[in-house]
Image (cartoon, rainbow, N blue to C red; front, side):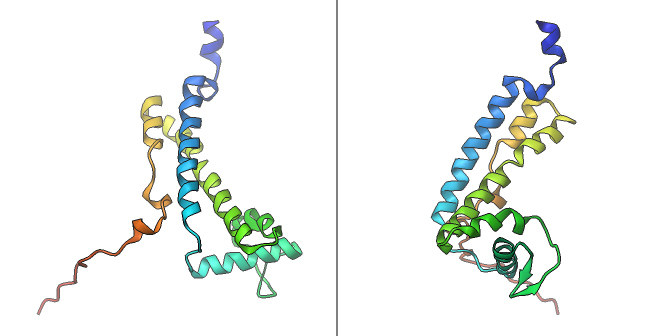
Length: 155
């Protein structure tokens, strides 16, 4: 039995899979909760552009921006296009938020695999099993500083 265990890849053992899936589900739940609290999109030009392209893909099968054919930019509009088949815009927006959460949280699996190439299993799990500030986006995390540093001018 030990010979079979020795030959099995490390990613198939429960001592690896259990912590990884536990971290995935815990972070997914945390990020879904954060996304659920965000009722409106942050208006950035790339969000508007990708939304237009994604909606065009959903309705016509081809990328377009305001009816004008558009070149390939990324897989993201194709990934989110099926959500626009929902009739209500709010439902589509919520679906896209939750799909994004699940897809971005799944990055912990290849990150663990890459980390395992250079560090031990425990360190790789520990390194991947902490929330990243760039993936947290509630309004309270973006409050302005009460005092902003000002650039000093010499002369």
